[in-house]
Length: 182
Image (cartoon, rainbow, N blue to C red; front, side, top):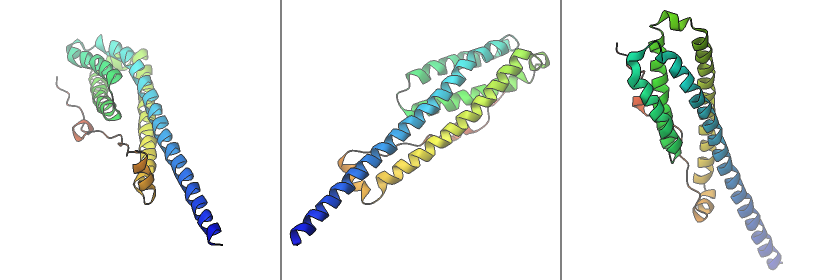
C-alpha cells in the first residue's frame, strides 16, 4: 500500500514538473511572439518614415539635422541587440516624428499637400498599433514574469534557467514632448 502511495506521489510530481515546464515554455514563446508583433509594426513605421521625411524635407530645409537623425535611428534600430535597445531607439524616433509633424504645422501648403495628409494619417494609425502592440507585449511579459517568480514554479524556472523578461518602457526623457525651435 505504501508503495502505491509513493508511486502516486512520484507520478503527480512528474506530471506537475512536465505541466509547469511546458507552461513556462508556452509563456516564453508568447513573449517572443508578442515582441515580434511589436517589431513588425515598428518596421511598418520605419518603412513609412522616408516618405514622410522626403515630403516634409522640401518644405523645411532648415530641419536637416532631424532628417539625418531619423535615418541614423532607423539603422541603429536594425542593429539593436535587445528589446531595451530597440525600445530606446523607438522612443527617440517617436519624438523625432512628433517634431517633424509639428514642423509641418508651420507650413500651410504642406498641411494641405495630399501626399503629406495621407502619410500623416498612415503614421497616426501605425502609432496607435505600436501603442497597442507594446501594451500587449508588456501584458505577456507580466504573465511570464509572474509565473517565473511564483512559488513553487520559481524553483523549476531557476533549475531550467528561465529568466525574467524586461518590460518595454520608454525613458522619462523620451516621454516628454519634443522641443521645437525655429
